[in-house]
Image (tube, rainbow, N blue to C red; front, side):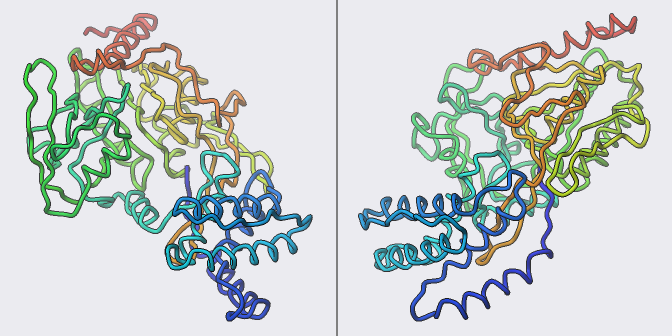
Amino acid sequence: MGMLRWGRVAGAVSLVAVLLATALPAAQAADASLVFRVVELLRDEHVARPDPVQLYRAALGGLREALQRVGIQTPLADLFARDEEHAREQFQRRFDQAVRAASGRLTEQDLQFAAARAAASSLRDSHTGFIPPERLAELRRQQQNEAAFTGIGILLVTKDGKFYARLVFPGSPAQRAGLRPFDRILAIDGVSTQGMTTGDVSSRIRGPQGTPVTLTVQRPGQPAPLVVSVVREPIVVPSVEWAVLDGQVGYVRFGQFNQGSSARLARAVGELQQQGIRGLVLDLRGNPGGFVSELNRVAELFLPRGVVVYTLESREEGRRSYVTRSGPVLPPTVPMVVLVDDDTASAAELLSAALRDHGRAPLVGVRTAGAVLVSVTFPLPGGAGLSVAIARMLTPRGEELEGRGIQPDVEVDLTVADLDNGMDSQLVRGREELARVARQGNLLLTR
């Protein structure tokens, strides 16, 4: 769950550069200013108040790993400093040694990025990490609801080493080429996906705008694989999709809490009500979270005024709770269920917990990601960024979900057999649970 705060640190980066220029002559010292900046930000901003000496030791480990990956076996001595100043001085000497040993195989920037990544990763939380320039640019575009990458417009799901198109985005190149949800991807440009990771599959499907990619897919109900060629285009990931299912059941897939997504969700709920829905399935599967401000507005679409959505615990302000300020858009007489999975994260987890804790909707699916913190993204030299967890988040019941996630009320896994048969078992069970909730409330909801 992130909030971008860009202007705050611009002056500080320049100041660090000035200090380094006076303390470490350029002729003698390699440029490790990005690493120093990362350690300072983590020290000053992270909710856990990390020890900067330990951060420098982790950064040193990142240097060692980077050198080893390219076959350089130069030993870098451990840091024995007990205070930050000496740890920084010792790290600078190890960094100089690493730059000399790299011998053109790794640049100063490569080594800085490796050290910064290791320092941030050492805190082992879901919202702190080094973000390389290309990924940061993609995230910023996605948060602004712009085309984030060039691809074909599908959402992948991986089960037991098999890859499926979980969603095919409306109007996308994939949809126009005839791809469908539950198509299993057997090969990409003739190369089998067996043994690949999700990252491998995603990177092979993405590519330059206007270039084709050929997918061999197995479609449920068809004996022979299909070969589909798709031309890549810039892709805007839809945050909200909705439909009316049989039995006047409203269905909304809410994909992310990006800028303006709460307004789009409110419009979807309003249009569904105009079509006379008798119940609502809110699908938060695969939702990675997003802006806290959007979470606040979304919660007010479904919860009554004056209830706690979450409690935030930060270094500067201690604990404070966010309470809904307006009444719900969806009347409490309309039954509701929420679908979650192991990719439901951050703001989506907090929304799920609030709806559950206040008795508004049961949760159906599998345990959520357990990635629930508030982070700020700081810019770094070279176009990179640093995401820093600045606050913990608690549910209305006071539970901390980081590293734990939420166990749904009704546990239903989406199995390989379900995917191969083209059946969304979680949605099916969610509709059954919706009918049960309606019966308890003496409401008419037919399937």
